[in-house]
Amino acid sequence: MAAKSFDLVVIGAGPGGYVAAIRGAQLGMSVAIVEREHLGGICLNWGCIPTKALLRSSEVFHLMHRAKEFGLKADGIGYDLDAVVKRSRKVAGQLSGGIGHLMKKNKVTVVMGEAKIAAKGKVSVKTDKGTEELTAKNIILATGARARELPGLEADGKLVWTYKHALQPAHMPKKLLVIGSGAIGIEFASFYNTLGADTTVVEVMDRVLPVEDAEISAFAKKAFEKQGMKIMQKAMVKQLDRAKDKVTAHIEVGGKVEKHEFDTVISAVGIVGNVENLGLEELGVKIDRTHVVTDEYCRTGVDGLYAIGDIAGAPWLAHKASHEGVMVADLIAGKHAHPVKPESIAGCTYCHPQVASVGYTEAKAKELGYDIKVGRFPFIGNGKAIALGEESGMIKTIFDAKTGELLGAHMVGAEVTELIQGYVVGRQLETTEEDLMNTVFPHPTLSEMMHEAVLDAYGRVIHM
Image 1: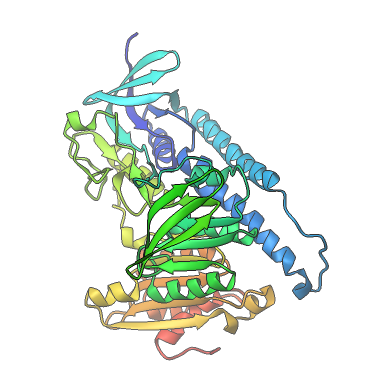
Image 2: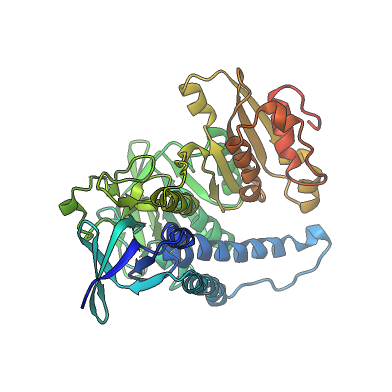
């Protein structure tokens, strides 16, 4: 069978891949996208979207228990775990199907199968009908990543889970151990803890959510503990002894090993890039710790070959991958492309309370030598937060004292994953503290706290 020729072949149909394909098609390219499992990739099928659907169910469950606070009555409150999971899978399926529609609408050729770059500009795809050959001057790798598994802590789907198992639980955990307190670990800890699991989180670093500002991490930890979670910091799971219906975890903390029994363990200790069996080594592509090394424009060093998203390294975020997809397509088309700036990409964690941030932490700003001004504002000082019954939270801003540049913003509390984009736009537009202070924020909204946190950095806070 003769090879099919395209201007662009994208390998992987996650957020970065399918966005790159659509943008390429918009720019007049003939585009093919190769996917071995599901359109939408991990994010739509096993990550961002279905986890948020689960968390929404637990959030409503939590609010139902607070009905009396709002003058409401709700008796016999309970949940159907199978129905919760079914809704989550339905949401994921709906969006995955939507990607197929977008491919047809933009005339992108979809090839389901496993791809290998046979040579420069040549992609060989193993499909259920045989092997299909594609050629293209430009190829984008968007193969994503998978859960990291540590020796001795490997998932078995019964007692020890990865995120995939946790999304389709075989049972409701009674006593749960979550290894790792990054976004994935703490979101699942929050979900299962809210539904009643006795939850313990073990984190090897000195605080939960270790990439966040230390002050925000400390606030979140107190909130988690108030909800009944047990948090073990500077701790490491050394061994898991598996029996028929329980796991004994050997946890090293403070130089001593403690043994704790659980019926379920979720391992959330990071990810590894899907770089295997793609033919990258033969092409001379440089790989560092399972991730493809690229420059700021996602170029791999091999002419016409780009890598975007999780396979290209941190931050491991769907919105970063999507932005890179657009940037690379524009670059290929000869448009003016703006490189992605990792420090200007927001991170969002959808636990309860939510956590969101952009830019430098206070510690990082000081480490970089900035003379800084720091502002803070608590949710308890905001009328809308009180009306919502969400008085627990805070917003923190960090400015360069010399220039007024917004160096970082950090939030914990209700809906902060929606609020953070205001500061992201501010950073993108190189907004100063004066611009933000002179901006009128609508009342009553949670966004007013963003204004107050800026005012506080300069000694002008009103409602505190």
